[in-house]
Amino acid sequence: MASMQSTKYIYWQDKGQWLGYLQDYPDYWTQGKSFKDLQSNLRDLYRDLTSGEIPDVRKLAELTIR
Image 1 (cartoon, rainbow, N blue to C red):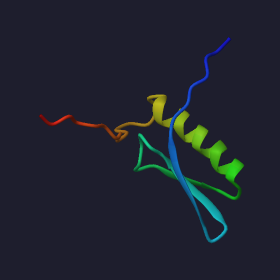
Image 2 (tube, rainbow, N blue to C red):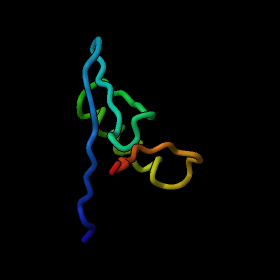
Image 3 (spheres, helix red, strand yellow):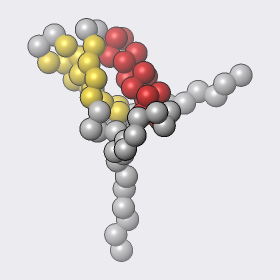
């Protein structure tokens, strides 16, 4: 049985469209006609970004400063 994965995303509605991006990949946005459609597109985007098939993917990171 495959384990469930999750990732955070930011979303909003603008002029009838749902827009969003994955928190770890803020440079890559997607959209959907419905909220469910947006979530499906975000899943596809996640698979594309983490598969290694897209070169030079930018990712968000956090740096601790002492």
